[in-house]
Amino acid sequence: MINLGNVVADSTIRIPFNSFDAAGASVTLTGLVADDVKIYKDGSLDERTSASGITVDDDFDSRVGLHADHL
Image (tube, rainbow, N blue to C red; front, side, top):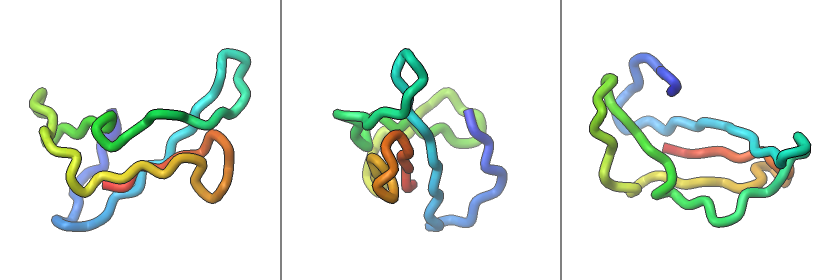
């Protein structure tokens, strides 16, 4: 889990992440959608129920295996 500290309401948060195959090579993710991103507020065990406003960029900047969530 990532703690981003205090975040200004209605701001955009970008979270980059990478994906690799079993051999460690960067790979493009297929089928990843905004509903796959889970958001928890203030350490709660209740996840956000809506994917509204969440986007997922596969192969960000045309780089295989580099992705970004925008919340």
